[in-house]
Image 1 (spheres, helix red, strand yellow):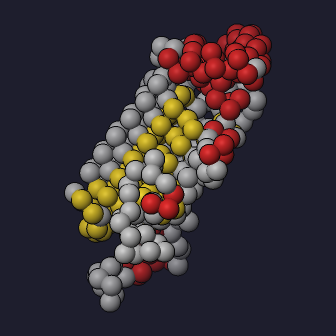
Image 2 (cartoon, one colour; image 1 turned 180 degrees about the horizontal axis):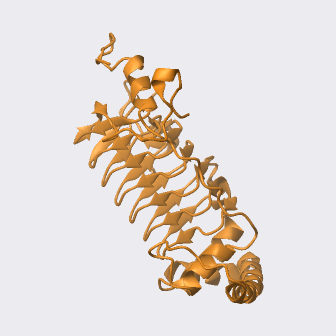
Length: 310
């Protein structure tokens, strides 16, 4: 199907639908669920040395018994750590330990227990690296099997300062090192999403024009009186399977469709459809589509009237 441009210069809807139907979207694996921060499968995978390469896990009776014993020990440890995290004075010490404890199994367990107490929701088998900062934790939901890398900052508004905010991160997503996600205006990150190192996602930012008094010179400093600032808050949506490249900036109100790719050092403004190829450097523009190199045999035969995956 040939590309047809509408009066905005963007590709036609028919081409977008053609691209959507060219991809096979595999059914999402059911994420692990439960009170424990680590599932039985993850524990056995680590015990068997099969975590890094994602090799099949042996579920033989001896391994299941060993896994049961380890889960019991971890359950007791998790209860103690979560209790300490709720005691006012000890909570501050727990946070310091969680943030700075070295990378490894113990560090991952300590951080998961602490943040499970503070976050609105934390799914199983999510790994949290050292050096992470989380503001407004009660406004943040993180799914299962995610990875929050070193020195990530999540900010969803501080209620004590009169700020609202909300952040939802789906399952199987990765936020790279030194990323900043600001959810004061609302951020929704889907499943299987990657935000690469040094990227920033803002749902609130200062504007250079005052909304009520356009002729008034405004300050970009957050320490200035409110009447001297002009702030834009608008929700940001990152669709399933999307990717935000190294050093990119996603601005308030941006919407990135399913499977779309934001190339490195791009400033994303506005909405982009599923599987869009979003390029910079500088202000974003759509440069074609993310297309498969070959047709997946699991796709239905379009000649017989079948449709693409939803």
